[in-house]
Image (tube, rainbow, N blue to C red; front, side):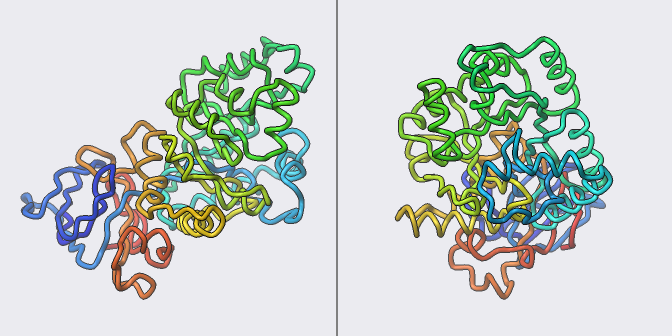
Length: 396
């Protein structure tokens, strides 16, 4: 397939190309250049008026709670989503599996229509929870990256006494990892150093919540005399989630460990837990991606997430983030979490793409394409979505 006369966000830096042609070869991006000619019998599409950008990557979701939208809206973070005592856990355990599957499926469809082609989900519920998501996402043109979790947590005494994970639960984790892409650890305040070191041996993706709240940071210091981030890094995670209350010292450690960060600003805002200092993270040299977190709290909409981060950072932190930097968090920065083959429009990368109507009533005139996408684009401005080289939503 050859797409001619198309504007493009190209490569890792999302360089804006005004007019070019892009060849799609199977599920990959092939040649890119203004002088490409059609091959024999090659379909040709006219991209005039369209902006081709990488498919969005939602780097942190809890899609399993799609059944619980806006329940307990005035409850605090512990009441809502604590991995042991939160009412979310009770809802998931007591809901009919077919109902859970139906609402998870709806969230997958919603994300795909909003230009999200990959999402990374912290999946509760052991292997049953993993299979629930796999079944729900089956047949939908979206890439779920599933980080599973064994339903085992330690209390403060076990942490202080550095108790290891019992052998039976180690076997549970080994079985779990045969069915998913890695492990999504609830947080360092639920595990001893010994347990975190065991998680560090996981060969797949490792991720963990850290420094989401002031309270969780205080608990960590009370139990261990270490910050939550110091203890989270014992698990050698590929990325840390939230980091809303990470200090400069924490971020320096993150950079030294070559660990990425995924921020979820709307979730932090809706839980009254502040706003992540992304400017400080970038200054520290951190690779920062972005996610929408729990569906029970937020719509899984990356356009709204980017817009919120841009404006709230200026309004509260008095720091002006570059729109391109925010767009990279949703695409090329997030690509690094998944091996670098998605989230980038470049030769030999997987052709996950979103086609934006430049002449949409909400976007025209586009004086700054990166800013236009970050603060003005929406599902309504999407002309088509491509997944692994095939148009799966809309048309060109």
